[in-house]
Image (cartoon, rainbow, N blue to C red):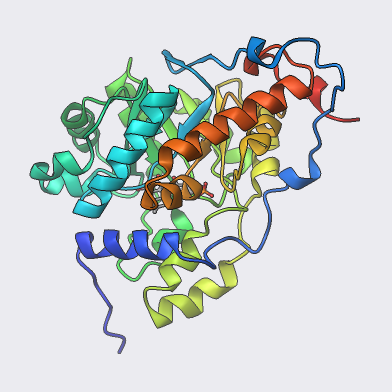
Amino acid sequence: VRIPFVASLPTRKTDHLTIAASPGVLHTVTTGLEDVRLRHRALPGRDLDQVDLTTALLGAHLAAPLLVSAMTGGTDEAGVINRRLAEAAAEHGLAMALGSGRILLDDPSLLPTFRSGPRPPLLLANLGAAGLTVDAAEELVELLRADGLTIHLNAIQEAVQPEGSPDFADAGERIAAVAAALAPLPVVVKEVGFGMDAEDVRELDRSGVAAIDVAGAGGTNWATIEGRRDDRAGAVAAAFDGWGVPTADALAQATAATVLPVIASGGVGDGVDAAKCLALGAAAVGVARPLLTAALADRADVAAEVLVEQLRIAVWACGAPSADAMDRSRLAR
Ligand SMILES: Cc1cc2nc3c(=O)[nH]c(=O)nc-3n(C[C@H](O)[C@H](O)[C@H](O)COP(=O)(O)O)c2cc1C
């Protein structure tokens, strides 16, 4: 008889942060972005500072089409990280999604571990699709005074996690009910780094969500992270170290399957990767783990600044006047 290893939610949060920041937690497959090349224009056509990175996303005005992907909240350490990430996002005009708010619904006194520091131009709450209810979604968005909600689909993680709830039978209906209840506030559905299929995107499109974040494979691997917490989980997780839809592939499938804004994320390492995603049709680009490790080193502000600068140079050097003008015509032939 297997005695399940069950960690309390705060303990699990701490484990996740420690393990996620350590080496060896990336997918064994790559994003596919390394095979995408942007054109290089020796005559970019304008001065670098004439490049316009501003964009509108979900009703907000961003200084650049970048999103701090959902990560954490609920512990003192998470509070420090969220403050540093919020400062960086606000300073550079980027969107930010907070980590899963489940723990906050259990204990509203944890609010300062989610919300401290300045407010980014677009602030999104986050909950998992497994166990999602309309009441929880409404209460969380209200508590955080968020501009909308991101809902994560994490089937592989829940299945590998010792205390996981791989209950996805009616996930689609739950998402549709939450999207209807929160409207006009936007609901974004994301994966956590295994990507999604075109069929998923079509289902989500029909469920009334405002945008889709493919969160593809090639970056952080949540089977591997869960596998580090427990030997048996590790044995199961080993087969999934390369599972999923690589980010470039997931992005191509999603943009072909919907006219909704598609956010690209999963293994986005720098501003050139972000520019490639925009050229492939993304409306914005999300980054998680690289900003976590920067925040832990109290360098989130510098990391965000570098990301924006790399994106600006890439948009400029492939001849585009603006981030919004990035399309397939900017890809090398
Ligand atoms: C420490 C950590 C915690 C995370 N927690 C959440 C979460 O609470 N909700 C969620 O939707 N995604 C969560 N994610 C997944 C990220 O939002 C993202 O989809 C994934 O890490 C892939 O992006 P990356 O390769 O840039 O890290 C977390 C990621 C990290 C690194």
